Image (cartoon, rainbow, N blue to C red):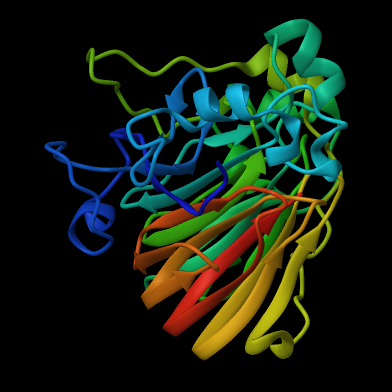
Amino acid sequence: MKYPMKLRAPLKDYLWGGTRLRDEYGKETQLTKVAESWELACHKDGMSVIANGAAAGRTLADWLAAEGQDALGRNAEKFPYFPLLIKLIDAHDDLSVQVHPADDYALPVEGEYGKTELWYIVDAAPGAELIYGFAHEISKEEFQHHIEDDTLLDVVRHVSVQKGDVFFIPAGTLHAIGKGILICEIQQNSNTTYRVYDYGRLGADGKPRALNVEKALDVTCLAPSREQEQPVPMADIFAGAKGRLLASCDYFTVYHVNAAGVCTLEAGADSFHCLTVLDGALTLQTYSDKVCMLKGESVFLPAGLGRYKLHGNGELILSKI
């Protein structure tokens, strides 16, 4: 049976994480810090669990395996796997400088698909910045030299950020989230990361965290990355809600939506919807079901569910294929 499914997210306590996802976004946990909340996840390293309705307690992956391809929609037929992984990321400290491979490298080398991703800046401390590609084109030999010489930060592009900024990160783009930034990340369903530089930090075992320099040299684009996405202004693109398209690519389509009052959307046969609430409180209603959504919660709507209404006031990310 198809219905709107509220998801319980697996949480990750990486050393750079903070406490905002627990304290402000309602993540129930005994963890001291919560670096990532995997809002929509069907991956061996983390599985979303359905929290309501007839399938409560089952993983979303298990329910989808029983329900079949129709629940993902026509646009997902080209993927032999669940296509998306959506996260909330709280960077209390700097993340490592890293890169993700594309499909053609990741599949034979890592046994899973590569990772192209999108960042929506949910919040940022004054002066916060991230790393986004290189400041100028360099050679592979220069890239390796700067890693070995501990001067990599001299040749990367540092970008100041604020709430509402959007960055499209194609596979092969060198990048790092800086401290003081809260992000909603929509990405391919992959957990392959090649760490290049980690500020000399030690892991939980007291040893330097492993780097993946050789693989990074194989996959990193050495030309400057294009400018971050400049989303179109908010417009009444949904019935009763203002939204803007953040990005549309072969892997995902993502909207930022401000809902006020009552608005109507539709999960058609082409794709499922995933709604991630960034602020406010909303009630999602179909012809037979009602789900309350608060800040920090995500709901999966199977493809073909049809029209649904959002009541209330809130800011959310809508992701689909």
